[in-house]
Length: 288
Image (cartoon, rainbow, N blue to C red; front, side):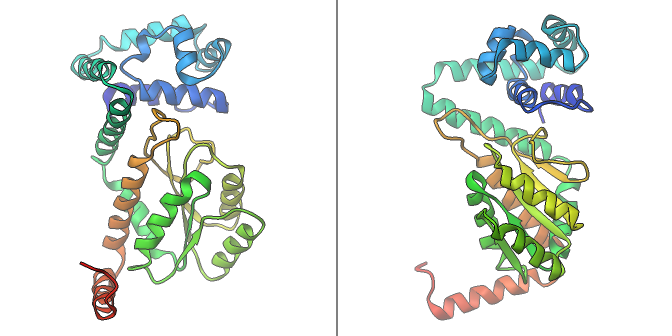
């Protein structure tokens, strides 16, 4: 992860932030290079909140007000190891300002993928997640509304190597029943894709899963995602808000990385995949 983003995350750690404050924090992390130079009004506009909310956010972090928070961020730029990274990010921002809206959307996703690449420099969290998912029989995969596509994509491929994948991509009263059934069948973990806007049903379903003793692996848009809870294994992958509807290239790629980690931890995964390929060829499933 970009050094400036990492410093901001450390600043926010340990604070109980409201949903509005998490939104401001998320905005600052995404614009880490610009954050020390934004006025409270500019930050409020970028985050889609009111200016007083920015002030309350700074106070929640322990500062006298937003000017004190901004002064702290500017002073951190003088610390060793930050100048080159911040200059590079600033140059990237200048490039985005000269591009059209469609190019800016693509550039934002490229930035998100760079952040994900930096995060994966430490493979331990993903490897731990892969082991948890591989060991769960069955493995429920949860994703509602905007996150349903990510859950379906993961479940489609995972079913080729995992003996029992259970996709939970629809809300309603049956969702709790399906989680309870998975627990009764022996599930030990649940994979959740959580993307904005976070449905209340996702939080309710995760609460039920935690209460039943399942380990939760969550792919979320931010470490400040409102559905995350202490004890979860949270893997962040940012979404882009540059277009009318969010784009989620990084969460999709992180889902595929999790698949790889699960396969590495799953005995017989390669044999199952080869068996599927042989059956598919016999049935003529694919044109190429």
